[in-house]
Image (cartoon, rainbow, N blue to C red; front, side):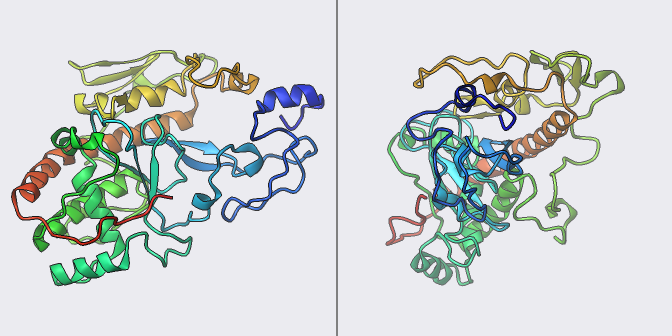
Length: 373
């Protein structure tokens, strides 16, 4: 769009609406990313360097952190972004159908991050310096006294992830999840809390692709969480055989993704990935299949029904790679490893939830543990 000279054509590419146009002057800064004083119509500089953002659960895409280009940017959330931040997202206005009841990310989440249908964002920290927790100090003190040990904000986030981020929680409390607000069974047992938090740290690490809650120095090898993309145990994870490479140029982008359960094979166009469990292929976040949704944004035909916004799509939507990118393969393999490890954790999380619900729960005088941003 930077190279477009015709202002009418530039405005059409920009897809102007009531909140943004090529002549909009932006005054609010998005976190640490500075404002460009010129309007889009006047700007002849290169695009602001894109960063990763959490588009959908487990789907991280790229976004230029330029407030002139982002509608409903929510600067108050951008102001909280840091190398220590974790964002929890969920919906509370509809019944959750399946999968984890919450999702997590270290990246700025899209408004529809959880499953593409709106949602709320609950950050772990209320400041970019990660000094003000988004959990009431009175609650942290109450938990610390109850369990006889210091409970940190990260421990609470980990406990929430361990208890709520799996299908058994959604299945057990589906009727209750219709009502607005997240409800957490909080155990009175310090050992159960510690067990849930331990599992939850791995869940957060997985949802954040190894960029949060890393711990490479754990005593047991199976408990280690090195920084970087998580991996299943050697020999148990997805693999691409020599004849399975997803072809790049000059082959066009593929339009199909399907699964062969007998071979545990994920097929993408003319390529395939082996050793993909059924549970990974079936993984959903409230009715949205993660793999199929991820592929839908990278296939050749990306047309979608118009819902709500009746304007025709921006011509920029037609600008996409003409072939499968190596980065797509890398991201897909990382996603398969993450989902594989989450599926493997589900039985332990389900068992833990049963034991928490069967035991006495902690009476808390605090109705709200964390605030939505």
